[in-house]
Length: 424
Image (cartoon, rainbow, N blue to C red; front, side, top):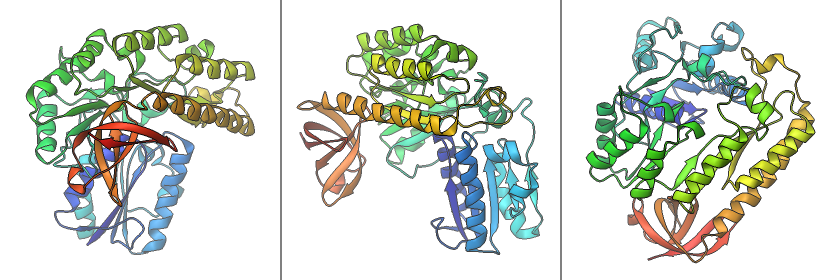
């Protein structure tokens, strides 16, 4: 039978979607989601209203493409909304955010019985589900080391959708990393819902990264997908300074540059603490790329507070931003607060997006006539493209046999937010 997967959402979802594909490919043939398939899997997301809307659209698209197909929906959106029969009436298999490891088994069960399957349960004592991949579907391999969140930011449903914090044991992380490297991946991106909170007994994230560097032969680069400001330990900074194999990029969410809103939204720092910490990081790691997430139009945000956020981002000299207009989510405290008008949210998001372009251009321009280390990921018409350690897109002429390799590139020019250079 032919199967197709539509993945929505974060790097953790991406990792899990790769695992579903790897398991199903043993007995079935994978095709693109745009094609007619016998089995459609929607790996759903609930972090924004747009993500939830896309999940619903993909269900309808799959049923329209093949009225007889098996439709399975899995992950966060199912966990939060599975009781809404109108949304999932067209679905055959629903699996929430636990027992996802059983999805391939459930698909085979449905093929045999044609009886609807719903597995959505609470998270009490929910263990970490080890989903071990042999290889990833892109050059940089994601490795899920953590799941769940205990922070309960007042705009976010993730603790409800993913449950409480849990981590993959250190020994298992090493085993999975070795397998990925042995199958050709030179860079591994450590990912989780709250990656910086990874732990195994007394071992923290810095211990894990040191172990990966020491014990995984052939691993040339480790990258962190995201980390909270309060989790960037001094030991982690020193480890990054001592070993160039750790990517010179940290994605440190800010969300707002206003202290009243940080406190209201249960963020564990002030603007002063955030600014001081990134200054300490830059002092030890000159030239590091520090990117962030920003939410435009949080409930009760005033024009003055938006402007304060914009000025604070400029002050921080962030290398680039991910800007999200606030989306009201049921089951959250923010949903009960006075909402910012939609047109105002869009204007504020547009203003921050414009700033994002200015910041990125300023940052990448600083690399003109300098050397960077690039992992080449794609090749088109003799032009290799990939990301530097700082997560800058770089292009250079070269042969396809350099795909998957890390090469030194001398930067010659900047063209449309992309550095161009030549391989040294």
